[in-house]
Length: 126
Image 1 (cartoon, rainbow, N blue to C red):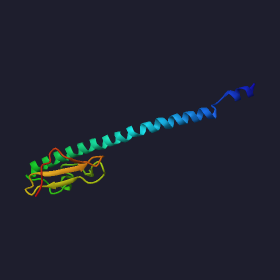
Image 2: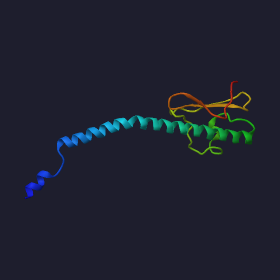
Image 3: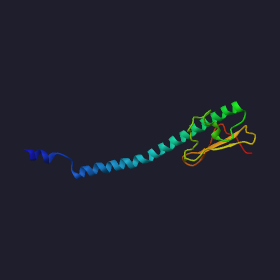
Image 4: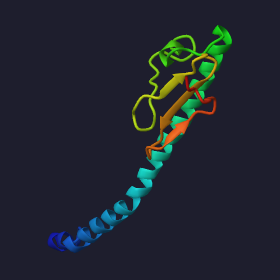
């Protein structure tokens, strides 16, 4: 009687292989959507960071009368300590104050490598 129960329990090798193959196919179908979701999240963070830095520059400009010389001038008083000024590709944001220091250019690259300009930026050529 004990032999009878043992023979019927478990899965066959063919059933296990079929399940593993199906899981592999489903995983392969899911990977592109996970990659695009990560890119969308990086781009959303870039947009949020650009808006945050724009607001910090605006507050700095209201207090001091000019734009800061560098983004590091915003740390502590206008932006939290330890904040990194990086875009979606992991490189530093590009900040350039104009010659009159009343306007600036703030840009970064999105996950596709395209340049994104902040809403508060103007043409800051010297």
